[in-house]
Image (cartoon, rainbow, N blue to C red; front, top):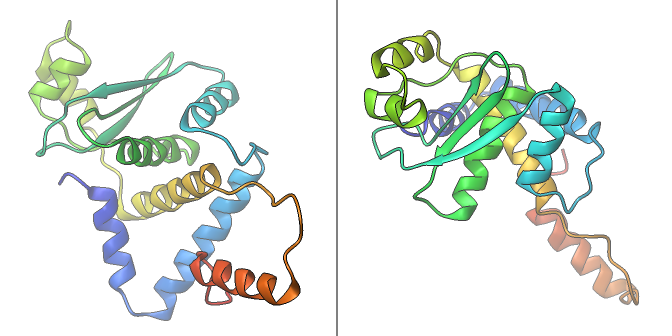
Length: 196
């Protein structure tokens, strides 16, 4: 399926149990804590996060845009012997591309192994000098489970939220009653707006 990570998130979010909600919150706190250790500036970009992950792993990480098609995953990460590779859908919006890349970066950051299934055409695009059947067989050895997809999706949201964080306010301080309204609005639009 094209959006297996989205399917995993939707599946878990549709559960009405307290246990699922508790697990999602636990994962969110864990991912936020892990990413905060990187101490990247709020104005980081996907390129900044990619460079930092490459530096931390001590190996190149290449981003490859390809027209993958509607019947393929929109992104995949490959951990090769000397480098990491993220292939992402070239024919989509920049915002969607950043989300795909953040999700695949998250799989690498979280130490997940395995990839989504790909067909011969994609194998030929990624590795044009190798037999597509061999590439497909090598890459299809394992797939991510729903738990890894959920963790990667939550980590991707943490990365993207950090990238889109507003800088600290500078300048004149608004009157207290205006600040109170601004604080309530910000709280209602934040991920933890329910006070948890």
